[in-house]
Image 1 (cartoon, rainbow, N blue to C red):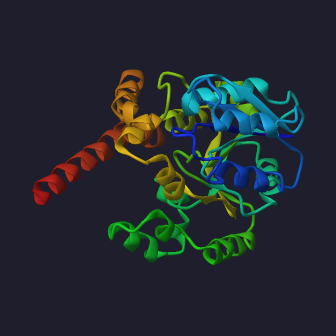
Image 2: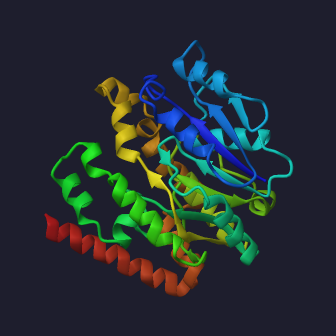
Image 3: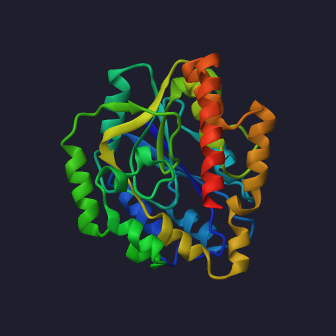
Length: 312
């Protein structure tokens, strides 16, 4: 059993009318395997379109709705979903509202990867427009059109991959073996977390109430516990990041409603308060040892200073 957890937050109540959530649900229902979907309503209380829609799709069995009456953010939404998850779930998947399922066999591939090696703790398939290049399909297949369009200021629908490109990504990756390449963190578009990890180290830290760095923190604790964090090399999940974000930004007022805007600085402060160092530096020291890590970090700092000086 796999429990898929979806924290749903709609700042201007437009996702239902735009077909974002209905499309995601329709594709989720086509997933092969034994699964349940837990949707956490992070919107404010009241008769919103999101709340009405969620009530209409909840069946109490395969689709459950957790109505929190406020925005718990990414970490809080995932943790709330965990409490409602099936007791026999062997792994959990965090799925974002802007995910787009194109591989309906993906759950079987995730289970296969977990079964191959007990040390694998968190995996994420290839995606698109991710902040982490290790998971970014654009980098893997050198799709320069997207990067050029972004720099030129094109609208989101012109930047994101076409249906034919998405189908080609999925087809090419499906030919690969279900291996996992380890990295230091993971995106939160469609992240699969083994239940053993949650039982061992707990779930997301609520120190950052909304978003930013919660995935790095969970990844670091997972790595320290002896598990592998990495990319599932045989699967692809589309990420409609720019299109969905564009729907949320009808005005500058809407921009301020997005959860990550107000907490970016707080997230950095929280990380430094908890670990006393930026995540990259902390990871390098843990990975390569205190002495070599310190030397490597010094080189990174020097390089940054030189780049800044040359840029000015």
